Image 1 (tube, helix red, strand yellow):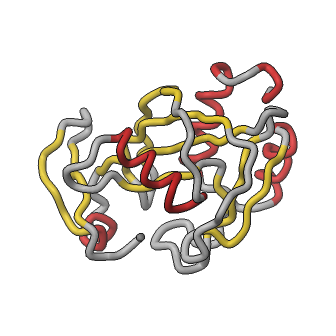
Image 2 (cartoon, helix red, strand yellow; image 1 turned 90 degrees about the horizontal axis):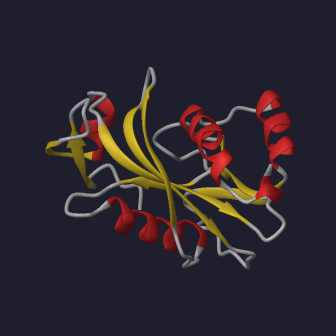
Length: 170
């Protein structure tokens, strides 16, 4: 969706819900919000990497190691993750909880719940949000992240969750 008029959950630094705001207001005021992140691995342990479209409201054109997005008002992290997987990648998959993580960046303050899943494809990429995508071995993802811009919160959550993923992914 990624509409500026979406109503998102606003939280405090402790991740307690304190209200709701439109997506555009949340970005303009740097309000702390919730998001879901899903690391998608294939049976070979490769991680799905996507390139964000230039129309994204944050990190346009950056690579990202996670599918996901903001948690909408009235939605749980898990509901958001299932919705985002379906919207962005056209898939349904069993989600495994990894961790909760706070990212406090210059232009993005977010409490994220991180999940992993396994899916071998095919994927139906959402043209409005995903310019391209491909599976890569984790060392290749790290090498690419040294040459190309990656979402900083994505790299953080990848590093947090790698100890919990199948051995083949390392």
